[in-house]
Image (cartoon, rainbow, N blue to C red; front, top):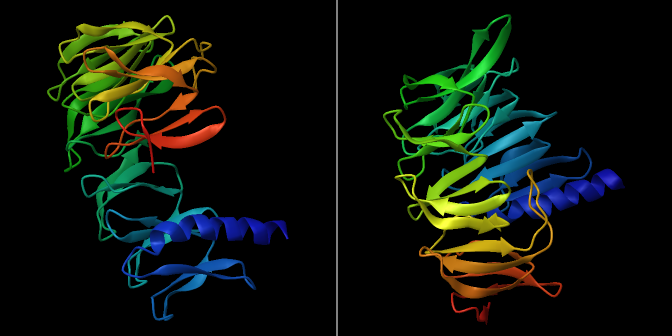
Amino acid sequence: MKKSLLMLLLLCAGAWNISNAQGLTQFYDSKIYKFGLKDKSGNTIAPAKYDVIYYKENVNLYVVQVNYKYGLIDATGKELVPVNYEYIGDFNDGLAIIRSQSYMDGYIDQTGKLVIPMSFKDASSFSEGMASVAIEVKDGFYKVKRYGFIDKTGAMVIPATHIQSGSFVGGYASVSDGNRWGYIDKTGKMVVPFTYQRAYNFYDGLAVVMNNNKYGYINGQGKVVIPLKYDYANGFSEGLAAVNSGASAAFSGLPTGGKYGFINTSGATVLSFSYDMAYGFWKGKAEVEANGRKFKIDKSGREVQ
């Protein structure tokens, strides 16, 4: 009974996107507890032999899972990548991470071809033509991971010298020396020194940074343009960002309590601190929570559908 309920929940969750892909929908065979794909006429496109099917809408492909191993099929049901891998990620810049059974990462293209060998100890999705990857190096008696950046040919264009790294967004990527975070440009030049306990991606030309559990924003030159005075802060989206005042500090995960409001890129409060939770704007709307309700608002703070 529990397994049937779990499968039903997975079907409901997965079919939402899949039904939009050239008329394909998931179907579930309750006798064998497996999923497949049918077209809008009811013809079987992929037989029911998968534990889970994930639709990758931006490339119209499907990551499939059997016994916690992953593969890739197309909209005709053709297997592009056999179901033998530990992980297949989202496609960005035309490439997706693939992880071998020995937990080494590489990249496949949309045909399923391995275009960058599985030779990395860790890997991130491509962004702005580059991806953060980790290789193993010796540090005294120990082997440790160090992060650098590759291009779409797999060439290491920024040496793997960093303890941690983010992705390139807006021409900059966050990197860490193990104690603090700063930023590099696409040449690998340090443009913001190792200053912050946390450093996030640039959006709308500004990045969230944190020191002493207080959040603010810097520009690409490293100048603090909105003071580190908030108890939590999200990245900018469509010119506005949700920030929190009064929350309890939390170094990992979201802080608790306090109220959220919205500021503009000048740091001015444009929507008052009246929300229990708030998310970024997308197409002029943001989801918020207040008084036990979840609803959407426009940029004036008016509730909308």
